Image (cartoon, rainbow, N blue to C red):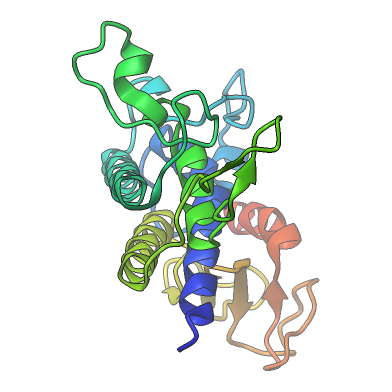
Length: 255
């Protein structure tokens, strides 16, 4: 029986969570907004801020470094995803890990009694990115072959191959985490009419399109007769892609 589809789906979900994690941290710092403008534009369009909302320089990207949150739903989602991913790493480590204490590949469990806070958190102190990459390694059966010491003495592999039931548990957890994150960011597959925002060029109905692997777009129901200065999509609708959305926001504001 091939487990390749389960491996592929798990790895894809984990990578999606890692790639969108910084966006969730930005959402926590941004007050909840209506459907329009798209949440991805929120921190670009915020006026009057002395400093932009940038999280890429934080290492690791962890929730506990946040100031008072402005979006509690996003914070709750982040905490839930961290808990799911960290608990999954604990479960996999308990089943397949054989590395020594000083091996950097080792997943360190929490030690509540430790005096040092970082030591008490174990590998969780490194954040969700580290945990996701570590789980991905177990799903891909990395480091499961015997190794040799410097004197050529063979040693047992650092990890055992992941058994099927834990692969499916990893897949289930990763997909749940991915789904929760995408919904929190409004990036799940959805089509949302914007009745309160008629097209500023022809008064047609605008529709917002979002998806997990696409930038948000907006289309006008009028079709090619609309004189908006944007291309027509395959369905004959004027379409504002990511590069044109700020122009649409400006046009709607002027209208």
